[in-house]
Length: 517
Image (cartoon, rainbow, N blue to C red):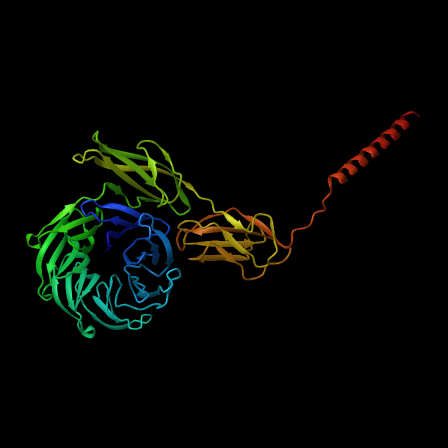
């Protein structure tokens, strides 16, 4: 999560949400990007001008154009190995920790075509959060603690040192000569980084707490997390970082995952309760004031159809108590992007089919003093198989090129494809048996095919790296030019027909004459 001006940008498992925070007591969603195909899990974001740079889980880097806050659109993307878990942009380079893939440095000079310029840069352990101060990059590296790299040359960061910390380091913030590290099962740990070659831990708070978010503003540090079912944000006065003093707290209904402070407000993203706005009143009073978010409830994906299937029909069942002055309307999405109105108890045929089922409930009321109660939401759904569609070569076509490019429609979620080619429709003597992973849904054959020969081809999709799904229908094609068939004009057919009639009449006359003898 990040706050920029009048907007908070919140990543989740199903999309990226832009929240209008101009009135902190009445939050409203301005727009979102929830394309299920493009979004994996947004673990971190960085805003620069009209672009949002997102650490997009297993899918690497995703850059969105947020010029229109009501309708963010994809600008570009770049796949990266493992899980992209955070991002910072500095001097036209994006520094992205990718879990077991080390640290990646992506050149974003041309944001429309980002590329991995740094390659694999090893970290001391799996990499989670990053922070930049001057020419140094700090990386929270799980059980190993905190790494620091010199990024004077951005494309080749040089390792400087590591400080060991308790628990699992997840997020890091730098303020002055100190690093503030949020650790899972390690609490908040403060590190003196005045000498990057010899970092030392100077304070350790809440040793068994599971902290996931940390933010430093002025003389206070804010951390969000939970322990033993208690969920909270804690505030410490760090006027003396080596002797922090408790300054406030706020309890949540669910665990705090990230925190950002802007002005008099701390914005905390929680794992299940969405975004809360907290007014930090008088810190000495040890409390915050909660403001309710806008009246929309939206689920993450509640059902994933198998690869090769699509959701065709859904039926919603709800248990609710609705006052006469309130109305709750329900919507469903199967493609992660388009919402369709659905009536509880009535089977709904999906218009925008897809594999990812989620729901949304919207409250409208004329009496702010009453609230509806939704006890449960359940769905019954029907899926259908999606047929593999082969595009080229088409069935029984003649193909002039000896090395044709085979093309087919991409299957959503497929890990890869298996392309088979043979001169027999039984595929008993395969000429080609090519497995294609992480490739586009097309393939250009390398070895030239034989002119005049008829070939048969089909494609199957992989549901995992070793599990094969269904095959497409078998199509045939012939290498060579299509034979030219002689064409007769209508006049030619008429002359031929008249000729045949004349011959028939002559034969009949001859036969009649013979009958006279």
